[in-house]
Image 1: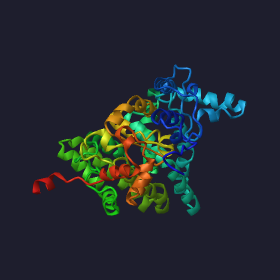
Image 2: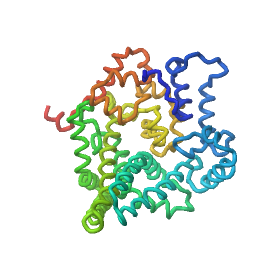
Image 3: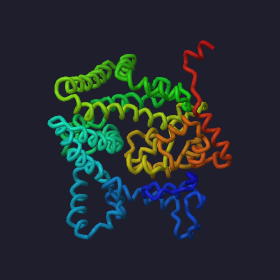
Image 4: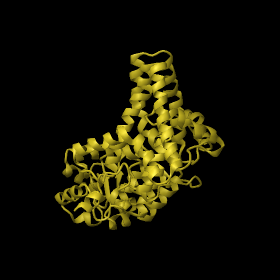
Length: 419
């Protein structure tokens, strides 16, 4: 598979439209024959189609119901199932969720509360090793999507309609620990800290002061977050004069650890291992692996630019299964932007992305960006790069070297003073 031309058949409809809008070369789109003029959408038509898919009043409105299947796939279901099951569910769910595009959010909540929640309680009631392993496997399948649903929840003040505000407020306190998060820590770290600092020098999760292709630096980065974030985040808020946030961040993090300790020592140790400890361990590592990939390429010329410190992925796993998480630059440009609006926002601003020398990739996810960086496989990453702006005129080797240059560590402020 050549990542520079391969088009994954599981691309979302929006990603296919974005690929068509960004890439001019038919071969690079994976097309064996050029399309006729009447088959091509103009930039304006692409924007109109993407906007129509998100507009509940538009005839082309297309809510996301499931992550695995798009609307055309659901149309293949038998007519009775569509008429008496699927369509009534969609109509009902559109009135339950906060944004009518987000039927999938309710689908996920139903999935978690009919599988993981009863499974967790039963493990405490009657533990078995096989059940514990199967439960953890289910948690691994769900944790990525849940994290990005939680991401939507904290940025948009919930995922359900205001009529259901009580449940919308409370469900994270049950699901968070089961899917690897400590209570409210993601909110304080991501909203009140990461988006304030933007991967800058004061960001506790910044990648700036590491060589992003160094396995040793990567281990230090993950280890620091894993073992010390519980202390460093409250101290960060304290230094900023935000005592309220410092106390809340410390309270929720430590109370979660205390709950795990009590359940492990006084209720059921084996159930606690599978229900709470293993998910927390995996998620803490996963968050840092993902953040390393998201912010691995930082341009020395302007590290504070969102265009030059984050990246965009037009990619199946990030966008189909994690609510367009691949559009990370778009998210940093506007943290309140709804996840379904990222593709159209990117297409509208694609010339600006090109002028700002932003990086856009395909056929590689954040985790495998991290893996390829640690292997120093820049040629592969250069093949995954969708060249825009000045990058179009670069050779493959020049693109690889450009990527390498953006992974070099920055000197810390105190180091500059010493020099």
